[in-house]
Image (tube, rainbow, N blue to C red; front, side, top):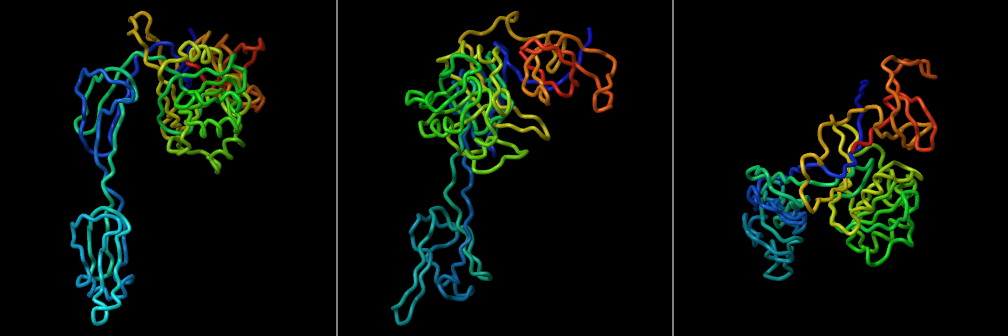
Length: 375
């Protein structure tokens, strides 16, 4: 049978999923192999050094760098609080003294007799890593983190912003082609993952942020709305570090694109269940997709778990999405995979895929212009 390979999005009702949860620097792992963890459970912890703050103390006190040490009230290694006096001049006959309080809490790291600068190191910052996935710890990475495994329902999006978030799935659309508007966001959605159908409006995102919604999932978003929400144009970048307070995941693309029915129905079937989401997206130097992960209540049998198919394998009958004009965003299924190259309108030769779209239209498009919807 003809077979091709193409990048695609996973939409799986049941698969075995593993995630590595690592600290940014060496620290302590808090669980053991075999431990059953919840998504929000802390599995590793460390302390990051605080930020360094240079202060030209000699200039502020009006003394020469060589005289600074005689004015210091603190020594290297001293633990200080914000407002504690760092140094004080002797003044004139004991009067007109100048004193400088510490702008931050932390420690005195260095005192320079050459430049007159004092380096203050802020208080250590606690960093914790949550399990993210409700499952079983299957591997310990000493001093770094763990690997968690579970049977899950998995949905990958095409674009997202914002980091990891957790909450119950709140379905607010009746169909995959219903827009997610401001009126759909209600106070009871605070801390939840709101699932719409087609485009999420900019005012709906702003209300979700005000309400405290953990995440929004929709088929599409207008790039103009996204620019207004962020305050800048993303361009080609890695996302996931945005501080909006609400993670946004788009499953289909930019514009008024209805969510794929299989994606919508999968999310709808898990309404009310806890899920983990991550909006981090990268399209260069290693693809990273935003995702919605729902740990299943019961383990899957081997026969019911998605397996036996090569990731990225495009076959007759495979569901696809077209990612270039003139059929951008259209969903369909593969009807034929010609082996021979075909001359395109651009007068270049390329391998193509023949597909039947959801509206019944039969099209022929280059294989590079389609994306597999895996599942």
